[in-house]
Each structure stands twice: as C-alpha cells, then as structure tokens.
Image 1 (cartoon, one colour):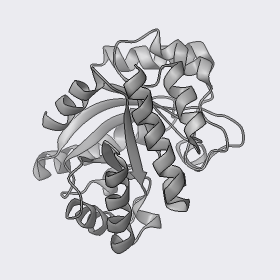
Image 2: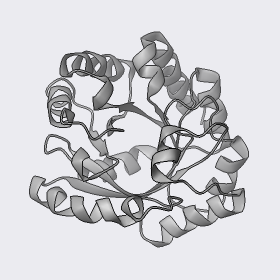
Image 3: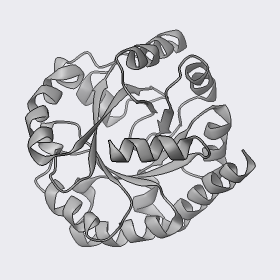
Length: 243
C-alpha cells in the first residue's frame, strides 16, 4: 500500500492538495503539459477521472511519463480503469440511488484492478448539493442529504474500513461544500476528509482547511487558469506551515 501509506504519512504533519484531470477534456499532450505545471506548483497527487472515454489510457500514460507524483484513478465506471496509474480510489458513491455507483461498477472493475496491479485505496464518496444539480447528481441519481445524514455516511465509510471520505460539490459547481458540513464530518470520524468542487480560489481553499478538510481537490479551475491553481496550492502550503 505504498501510495496510501505515503499520503497518510504526509497527512500527519501537513495538509495536501490533489489535482483532478478529466481525460475527456484533455489531449495527452495538454495533460502532460498541465501535469508538469501542477507538479512544479507542489500538488501532492494527480487524480484521473470524471469520464469513461477511450482516451483514459492515453492520457494516463502521458501523465505518468511526465511527472513523479502519484497518479490515482478516480473513475465513474469500470471503463475508467487504466493500467498506467499507480493506484485507484476504490470508492462507493454512498448517496447514489443507483446500484451501479454503490457497488455495480466496482464489481466489474475489481478484476482489472487485480490484473493491472493497481493499489486500491478505499474511499467513501458523498456528493453534496450546493444549488443547481451538477452532472454527477443527474447521472448517479443522488439523494440530497441533511448534515446528520452526511455525517452518518462518513461514519459508515470509516466502519466499512475505507481510508478516506470525499465530500464533493460536483464538477463545475458554483458553490463549495458548506464549512459547517466539513466541520461536522471532521469532528465525527477518524479517517482523513477530502473536499472538492467549487474551490476556485485560495481564500475558499483556506476556508475548507480551517473547517477541517485534510485534502483539497481542484479540477475545473486547473483547466481554465494555471495562475489560479498556483495560488490555491500556495495557500495550502502556507496553511501547512501555520499548523
């Protein structure tokens, strides 16, 4: 469990930043260039997912050949599993009402994870509605939850033996996960909390860290503005030095 152990070791003394790449939106050449940039800014890992296109292998391979940070798959189906990654978030979308996202696609993908020798990292995934429904909410038929229900999902993930809980507002979300939800989850579980979606600047990233996030994920903003990503990662790094 090399990748997971390295991340958990780093988390004992600092907060982390993950960059999320969607193969559907990036050519291998652009993904390689972007990966080099976020690595130079200090991102701790690159997550690859969000689509089920046939380019996932090409994009993952291009990134693997360009950087040294861990590559962790974040697939929305078994089609998103690539042999070129280092690890995979083997996750269940806990507030989906569709079997495929709870366990169906995971069962399909499990043989590939074994065949490719990927490191599986268990994760409980909860999508938080912050306004208009995002793409993932529509596709996965997400159930909107109260704060108490979200906390219960996080506890269930911990009791299932998962290593992380990921609270996400969804790709392209205009608002981020509310701070009070992050704090409630953080105060109720012992495993690290990942927060993503709607984090479009350093001030928002700092808010999430102060609320209890252990890892900040940025995706859409990476594709739109390199300088903004550098500012967000810098904010995470400075927060580390203050903690």
